[in-house]
Structures are given as C-alpha cells and as structure tokens.
Length: 471
View 1 (cartoon, helix red, strand yellow):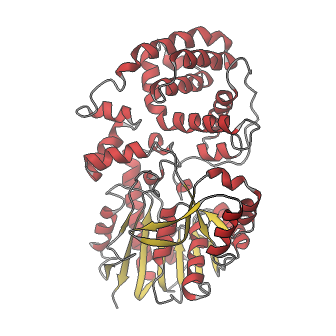
View 2 (cartoon, rainbow, N blue to C red):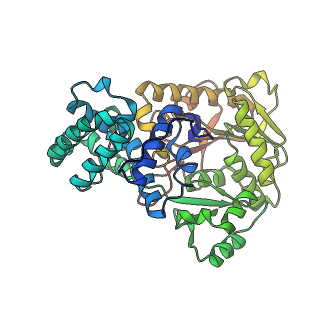
View 3 (cartoon, rainbow, N blue to C red):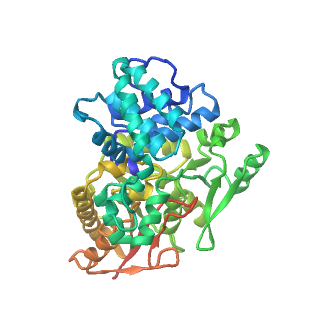
C-alpha cells in the first residue's frame, strides 16, 4: 500500500492556532488549515482530508472545493513554488503559512483558470488571516501571476521538457523518466490523468457478505454501483461507486464497519483475485501485508473460489504497528490468519527455518507512482535514487523468498508503480540471478503479466507477475 512509501499518516489534527477568519471563504480557510497540517505532520493529504474537510460543517459544495484545492496544491506544489520563487525578492524568508496561502491562489490562477479578481482578493485575505503584515506582498505577487499566466507553462510543451513538466506539475526528471519508460504519448496521458480525481471502488468481503446484498443495499439507497471489468472479464466482487458521498450514508457505513465491504482500488482487487489459481494452495505466505487490505481480499477470494478460507495463511510485515493493525482488521472482517509475523522480509531465513509454501505473494514496497491520484504528494518527495533503492530492495525480497517456494509452487510479485526499473527490470534481474534460476514466468490473469494503465475513470496503475518454481 502507498503508506509504505512516503509520509506519516496520522489520526489527530495538530493543536495549532486557528487562522483569523477575515473575508476569505470558508472553503479556502479550511483548505489552508489542512495544508498546514499536512506540512507540519508530514501527513498524507487524503488522511488529513478525511478527518478535517470531509467531516466539517461546510456545505457539500464548499467541502468539494476545499478538497480540490488541497489535492491540487499538493499535486502542483513544486511547480507553484517555482513560479512563486521567481516572483519573490527573498523567497527563503517567506513563512510557511504565507507560502501555503499563496500556493492556493497561484493554483487557482494557473491550473483552475479562476477569475483574477476573485483569486487575488481571496489570496490576499488568506495571507491576511495568517500574517496581516504580508497582505501587501501577497497582493503584489498575485498580480504578477495574473500578468504572466497567459504564458504558462512558459514554453512549448511539445518541444520543451521543462514546459511539459510544468504543464502537468511533475518534476522534470520524473517526466523524463516516464517518457523513457512509457513512451511520449502514454507518459503524457499518464501525467494528465494523474491530476484527475480518483474513482471510488469497493470490494465485497465474501466471508461476510455477497454481491447481491451489496447491490440491494445500494439500490434501496438509490445509489449507483457498477461491476468492474478488466479485459472484458469481471473482477470478482469489485464495484465502482458512482458518488463518493455514498460512503457517508448510514446503510453503507454499516457495511464498512461490520466488515462486509472494503474500500480498495480496483487494481488492487484485480491483483488479489489473480494470485490464487484453480488448485488451492495448502500453505500461503503474504509478504508486505501492511494494513491487511490484500489479506482481506485474498481470503475473500479464497472463500469465493474454494468455498472456505485458506487454512495455513501467514503474513509478514516489518513494522509492529502494521501487524497490530492487521490483527484488528482481520478480526473486523472475519479473516483467518494462522501467523501474523513482524520480521524483515530480506532475511526470511532467520525466522522461517526450512518451511516451504505453495504460494508466496510479495506486495512489494515501491515508488507508488501508479497511485498519484490518491497520493499526489509522492511526485515531489521521491527522487531518482529512491527508484534505484526500491528496485534493489524488491530484487532482494524476491531472492530472499525464492528458497521458501515449494517445488511447483508460485511466487507472485506485485507493485503499484509504472517504472521499468521496479517492474520488468526487477523481473529480468531475478530470473537471471542464482536464486531465480529454477523459476520461470507463468500466466497471471490469462496474460504474461498484469499491467494496468490509467484511462479516464480507470483503476490505478499496478503491475504483477507470477513465477513458477520448477521441481
């Protein structure tokens, strides 16, 4: 899951001083408060939104606008700062609160094409709410943006990589990498769609519910859900929720709290539904179990496929708090796990002895670039060295797991990213390694690999392959 990658998800809002209300709109003030919390706690934007904007007393329209501002500013922060720094005499001396306020108005002017008068006026009021003495500076800077915004992205994106990166608010190095890995057309489409709102998907927990119950519940509430398909085939138990506000309805909330459905992107559900084959594995090891979302999905699919959960199911994660959370969630969802271990997946031999498994599933830590619509901050935190480090760790995880796959057993490797180094590059390196010498690629979900790509309203971009160990 993306929380393995960057940021520190938190549950409590910081006890910082309130901003002055002034004349700034409620949505902008709430967005400003959320941005401060994200910055001060190094938290995920989505986590902060869930316990601030989403539960505020604002109108639904204001909540939607505040959410758009927060996610937009987080997505575009590097580009917004580049523009602001060029217009400021002493950018390093600007307070973080004032910068947050100016980012909001700069985002409205450059990416939302808002009315100059409204954006400037509200930007000045936002700055006044945190630092009244900086209101004049805000007025001057925002008026400069109004004068230059017609030239944005300040170059021809068809011929100028820097302009292309600015247009879609990506670091230049990352735009260059995506073009090299995906090709120009697909990279541009990926960057464009990474700035769109992510759709909402839920999965049926077959242990406690059925597709029919889910469908009937949404029908009674007059809410629309649609079965999700991949390559013309339905993803078992996977549905897209048309209106995200449906999660706030009492009947849907009951289904969530009682463990009958789980919120999970369709790509994650696709991977989970593809791990298990026709023959039931008698022993199963999940590496990188995290918050147990895939654990829930995998055991739900076992129930759907075999009529019962897998009996010998073991999970591994390297963080104690994740293992604790896993135990809490599997209890909520009625999921059976024989052993939930906290251990280093790079040194499985230290705690697995000589035990072997029919199936090992590695949900690998990765750059998470396939989830940018849900975790927009990743693009500005990740570095080229991070990509190399992830790829090295992923390869080492495969090498560590290889001896514990039984002859004829499966080793499934999955990421939620699109880089060649972390996907095909790792696969190739493993097969060429000493530890991978007895493995070969086998079909997964009827193809050589799972490689979902972003399209309008689509699932996230994930990758998965299956290796079979020769006897």
